[in-house]
Amino acid sequence: MNKQLLLCLLHVLVLSGCQHKTPDTSRISQQINAYEPDWSSLRKHQSPEWLDGMKFGMYFHWGPATVIGADQSMTRLEAIEQWKAEEFSAEAWVDLIQASGAQFGGPVAWHGCGLLNWDSDITEWNSTEKGPKKDIYGSLATELRKRNMPVISSFHTGRFYDRMWGKISKSNTTYLSPTEDHSTYATRNGGRMSNVIFDAWYARITEAITKYQPDMIWFDTGFGGTVGPELRKQLYKGRLLQDSLVRIGGLSEEYQQRLISFYFNKGIEWNKEVEVFYKSHDIPPGIGMRDIENGNLVGLQYDPWIADIDMSHHYDWSPTWFYNPKNPIKDANMLVDMLVDMTSKNGRMLLNVPPLADGSFHEDVTKELYAMGDWLELNGEAIYGTIPWTFYGEGPTEVTLPGHHGQGKNRGQNIPRYTSKDIRFTQKGKILYAILLEWPGQQAHIKTLGTEGKLHPNTIRNVRLLGSEAPISWEHTPGALVVNLPAQKPCDFAQVIRIERN
Image (cartoon, rainbow, N blue to C red; front, side, top):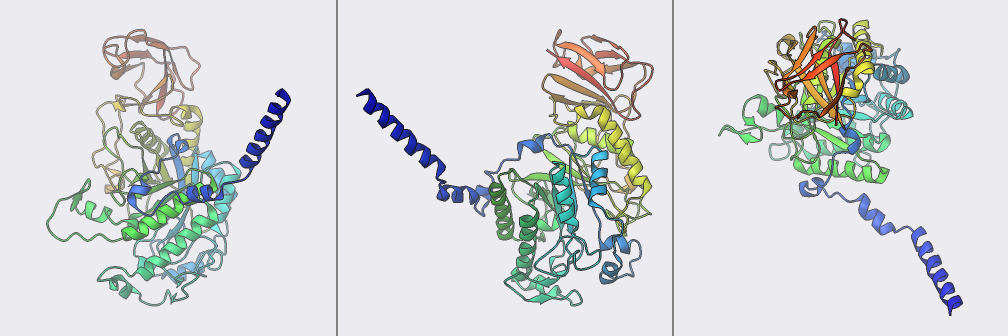
């Protein structure tokens, strides 16, 4: 009986092993198509866990607009012919990303005209067949992945009918010439944009997703069109403020849902978590991560967010975001303060770095990026992989013009200038970081951390200043954590006090 029972058990184990090795293709198919093109289904998506620790990324506005510069008499087709990108090197660009301390990066994949910055099989209007004759998106994605860095790509399509050059798609060979006026497509659908144009957009974006498998994609204002009415003060945080007709451009919900479900399902197929960034209220909350263009937010935010920040001050509007010698570069001190402030508020920064037309970088750009990298090498533990604390900060200074473009207007005058009393907090495990945005001198009085606040008596084990070997003394009083600082500060920008808690 024992022998028969043993044989029976072995038979069951063999069968179960065989069944385990046979893939359930129907189940895999169901998983790959887990997201349906409707908001309720898409809301099941969760922001990737790995993204929570990503606080600093970099991308690049680069294209025919860089060639045009301030010469608005030059046409886009002329600029494409002159855009040769002789000095472009994906390796050098990713070297710069890493030297700056950024954790992820990628290209502006499509901006301003019908030229795509990737090797497209749909249209010859792409950077491998025109202009540079180089696959900008593909080479950057390849180099970033060699270094285990997540890839972001952004799509800025805006006036859709004017930016779909070449064939509509592989199946629809209707040709849209860049020399013809296609504005009639803007009203062919009951006064709205024709689906022919949206089909061309969908074909191009899904091609880029399939070819390069980005970890994050970001859609500019054309994706949903809610930023315009918000800036015109017709909308406020999702509420209509006027009875007059509110014109909202951008894609219809059908194409938004189709594209996002396509991307999320591709993420399952690739066996990796992906994320979508969007503007304002372009899609319902809880589906992707909200982006604030060249701006910041007031106060600690409940949901993770991102701000794309132009490295240039906007002194001149011809052009912005692309390199323009009329627009000076923000210095590293300002950029570090912005990064710290956003991180403390549950945000992260995507920094736009503008290359020169040939693909190299102006020395003013590299100087400030290297300085940011030096600061992050010393103090990065207070940024990377951190989460917000109960309080994001203390001190008198706060953003005065929150929201889109708030940090880009008035030639940078709306960007806060912090004082020695301004402190921001982040945390990681048992470690709390108090980041002093200006050097206070001999002592730092951190009022938020007094024993009458969140940190009860005897909860602090140790305090030290990152980057300094000098011993420091401290006292935990009812009114503040008082830290006696060394005579010499360890770096030129924000200083980080590392507080170990029980």
